[in-house]
Image (cartoon, rainbow, N blue to C red; front, side, top):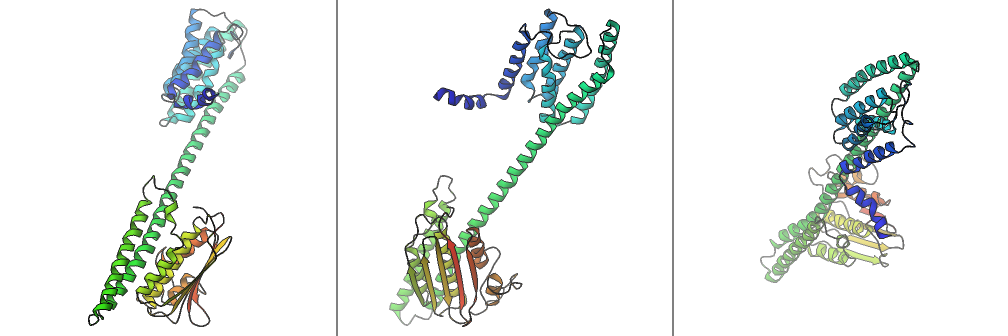
Length: 410
């Protein structure tokens, strides 16, 4: 049973010429069987003639060139057509005549250049054969009307057309696969860019704020040492996160390490606190197993919201609330008061209304191009969740996200 199951794989591994030669040999052997002799293709109405030495040569000439029907389709068609002409003019009417439409189909499917010239040449070669067969048949009194020759030509043209259709279908499929591959690469580049943005922006922002604060602590060595230690710790965490992200680019790297553990929410909040941002953190429930990409997206929402709060509302009270439900994760990050507006952070974001990226830009939070809050919205949308970012009635800037966890893709 194991050997039989492996036969299809072994067959596909064979060279295409070997596989096509097998088809030619089958037609060759079948043509020699007495039951099929003189019962093949009949064009012109010539009386059947028993096989002789020339018949065996004609049958071989019709059948064996099928071995190169994909590698050298024009050569295959020329040889098969020559054998077919001998077959019909001599009245053998062998089964090998079926090789002609196969060769035509192969030319239509696999010939890349000079397709029109080949079709014209084959049509031109068919005319003298049809004339000769018509004249011989008329002389013997067994000829066929001209319409029969036209009908046979149309049948051969149909075989060519089928091959051309197969070729166009193959090209369209190859183009579709190419577009899918390009889209996949573009999506992966975008994902990596977002990951780098999230990791680098958060850590570097925290380090800059901590370093700026250290400049005013030169008179307090203890506090200065704590501030510099916080900068070093943040830098080490940045390096660790970057290494984890770069590891994802390895082809044999698993996907489990891609999602930060739940405990890193606490680390994220503590790091922001060390940068001088007062943060209240609340976490409810236990994460669903498995949560798929939902855990990573929730982490990035908190990370981006805290980074923006640190950059544009430094020193304002910020609250983070994460709730793990059976089927979803909800995140809410709220920052008191109006964040200071940074020049150039609103580019391209002034058209929005209400909540979301447009409101975020108008309230002094960066949007960027496919990253930041806009990137978070896309991430949440991929998982069929809900995302909003904007001012609340009380003037706080609030980021909210509902992220489905059950069945999330990893």
